[in-house]
Image (cartoon, rainbow, N blue to C red):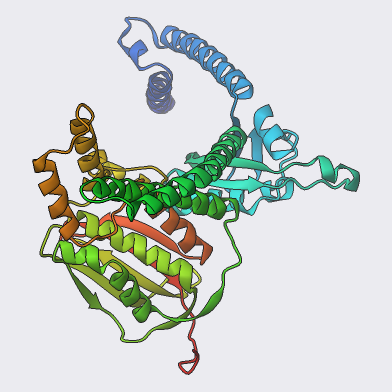
Length: 464
C-alpha cells in the first residue's frame, strides 16, 4: 500500500514537472519570438535559440545606439535650433543652436525645468499648446526679446526674429525646430529702402515730364495732340505707381500709423468709392449690388478706408465680364476666437475668372499678379502699337488720324496700372485698423471673393 502511494505521489510530481516544463517552454518561445522571430525556424534547442536571439538583440541594440548617437550629433551640429519638451512642457533637451537663439544653456537630464521659466516667450509656449490641441504640425513667426537677469547685459540682448515649426511626438512630447529670420528681415528692409529711394528719385522727373506734357497739350493741334494725350496718360499712370510705392513703403515702415479716426458711415463710404469708379463700371455696363444695413457707423480713418474700397472695387471691375454685377455684402459677425468680439465683414464679389488656387496665399503680396497677361491696360498696348507703327514714319496716316479721333470722342476713364500693389496696400491699411483681409473664390459666381474684417464697437448714432 505504501508503494502505491509512492507511485501516486511520483506520478503527481512528474505531471507537475511536465506542466512546469511546458509552461517554461512556452515562455521561452515567447521570449525568443519577441527578441528574434526568425530564430524559431532554426533546428536548434531552445537554449541555443535563446542565446542566438540574445546575441542578435545585442547586435541590434548596438546598431540602434550608434544610429541614435549619429542623429544626436547631427542635431547638435545642425544650423537650426532643435528642442523637445515633455507632456508637462518641461524642457528635455535642446541643441547648441537653439540655446544661442533662445539665450539659454542646454539643460541636464536630472534638472528639468519648465520651458517658460527658461524662455520667457509666450509665442513659443502658445505654439506648443496649439500643436497639442490641433494634433498636427504648426508654424509661427515672432520677434523674440531675450530677458537677462543682469541689468548690465540688457543692452547686449538684441531682439531676434524667429520662425518655429512644431511636430507632435509620442507620449505628449513636442519637438520644435527654430530658425533665425534675421537675414530675411534685413533683405526685406534693404529691398523696401531701395524701392522707396527709387520712387523718391522718380517722383521729381515724372512731375517735370507731366508739366511739360500739360503745357504742350494746349499748344498742339490734332492729331499731334493725341500723342501728348497718350504721353500724359502714361505719365499719370507712372506717377500713380510711384505714389503707390511710397505709400506702401510708409505703411510697411510704420505698421501702426497715427490713424485719423472718426465716426464714418460705412454704407456711404462704399457708395462714395463706387461713384469714384463709376466711369470704369459704366464702360463695362457693371452694376453695384449692395446688401447690408442702410446705416452703419464705426470708427475709421476715412481717407485710408476709402483707398481700400477703391482698390477692391478696381480689382473687381477689372476682372468682371460686361453686363454683370459687383456684389457687396456688409454684415456684423462674431469672431470665432476666444475674444468673441463683434466684427464688420465687408465682402466684395465679382463674376470674373477668380483666383488660381495656387495664387490665393500670395494675392496680397506686392508686385504679385496671378495673370500677367491681364496686368497691362489696353491703353498701354495701344501706345506700344502706335509707337512701333510710327517709328519708321513720322507722318501721321489718315487711318491713325481716324483712330485717334475716335479715341478722343470716348470719355476718359481712369485705368488701373496693374502693378500688383493695390491689394498689398489694402492689407496694410486693414491691418493698421486691427483687422484682416482674405481672398477666396466665391462658390456661386466662381469669381473673386475678397473679405475685409474690422473690429466694431457701437457708436452713438447722433455722432457726425
